Structures are given as C-alpha cells and as structure tokens.
Figure 1 (tube, one colour):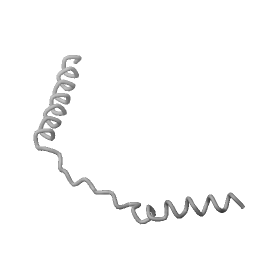
Figure 2: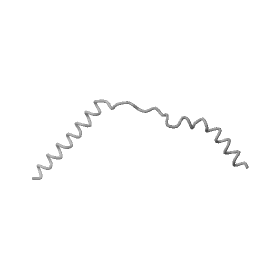
Figure 3: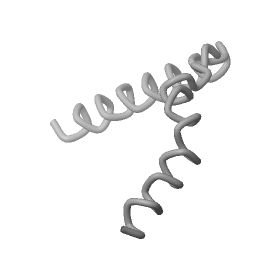
Figure 4: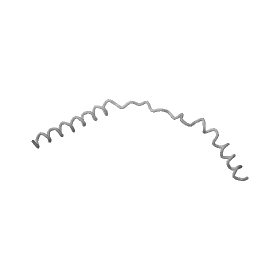
Length: 58
C-alpha cells in the first residue's frame, strides 16, 4: 500500500509540470551576415585550392 501512496504524492507534486511541456521559447535569432559571408569565403577558398591542386597534378 505504501507504493500507491508514494505514487500519489509524486503525481501530485509533478502534475503542474505536465502543462509546461513543449512550451520552451523557440530561438528565432538569425545568423549574422558576417558569419554567413565568412563561411561562404572559406568554402570558396577550399574549392579553388582543391581545383588548383587538381590541375597541378595533370
């Protein structure tokens, strides 16, 4: 019988938290343009250097 009593106490303690599930604030921050441009430049540099090495092998 003590197990059901303990379960009732825990259910009562956590019952109010059930309605809080899934209500976390959604991050709507956009990536700064500087980060996007830096990533683009790094990717472009990587592709250009890869092509340069490929043409040096020929």
